[in-house]
Image (cartoon, rainbow, N blue to C red; front, top):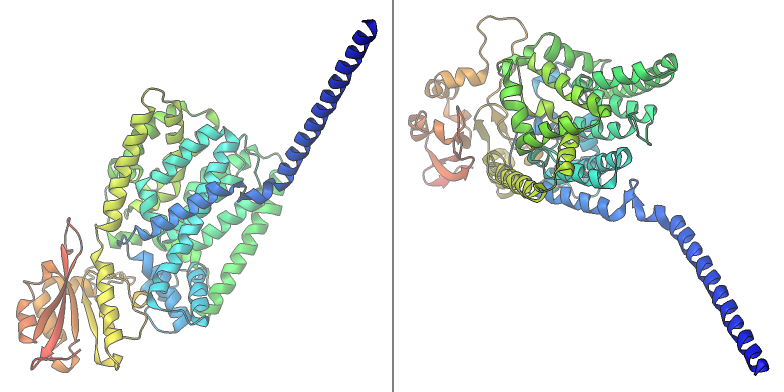
Length: 540
């Protein structure tokens, strides 16, 4: 019996030893797998984040791009795509800002490079010229969205970062602007990415050279970027121990390199050494000549501009301002400072304060993260309200000025002799895009509106002169029938005023294009295309 008991004890000890060995092997394999995952981790990352998050953001912004088919402001085309088209294909139209050297060629060069590549590949059809630049802008906006998420995850935690990310993605104004080829869009993108490298308290990615390089690039694209960055730069300088090194070895070095790069580009395309950034600031800020394009009361940004841009996020932004830690005060100061500075300028637009909108989303994210019982209703409210507004304003409101260009494109496709057709856009100046959305040397004309730079007291541009008495202006301008364009494009509000001219010159309405449910001023609800027809034959 003792022998049997001894054998049993030896047997159980053997099993125990085997199980311990097995456990040790399992531990080793678990450690091996963990180390293997760590080594494979970066392969599963993109832009420093989970690859699925990045791909989702890119896909959403690409989808966003195709769901914005309306016009916003003329600068979207006339300060980017039209210039790029002229640079690559040697025909088009440059507005007065370019002849007066107020704009630099660095930003249009991005799209000119895209146009050149498409041209070399033999793929420079008009649809690709329209959509590829916008898709490139959507990609950059997606990068900015991911960087904002990464920053908040570093500063706080993944949960809060998700709410800030949600607010950023569902913002109707961001949806409306982030895929447009506006300098304001690039200004916002570069500001958001630069903030990722800015030395905020708790940031693990701070890099003065990187954020100052992005800021310098944004400055040569749109010099007004210095406005929101003044409080941020002042804070960094105040807290920096090695102030001399910061200015001399980082800010000045980066500034000189970037500005030198800009000077060379502008020297190539302008033909002389020009500091366009100074000219831009002098015209828009120091001389305040931008008021030529309209002025608003000082409180406009507080009473209309900011509430519209932030939209239904506004109550959550205000709530978040009371919840956010002290280290985010610099962001709040930046928002208030930017709105105050722009309030002092006569000419005001919603897009001017777009660069601080991502800062607002930080406070909105804090608000949502703090909510408990009302979190689901708040999320549903934000998602629904922003989605409805974004879809309406992106697909319906002010779409006619883009849709009408497809009719102009057909004139190029139908006519073998392109010079036989000609177009006169009789609308407020720069209402439509131009050759970037036609891509053929079709003779076209529009009512011009350059500001007076000579100091005349009673100055009227061509568009103003026309709208004083449209009928008389047309008879005077086209006293000779041989100079008449084959096609006229007008807003519906103008039709009655010039009907006598249209009838006497044998113009017939050939197309009606919807534009907006909310016409105002010289803008109509529809756009009409008139074609000149003689003896029943199509003259175009």
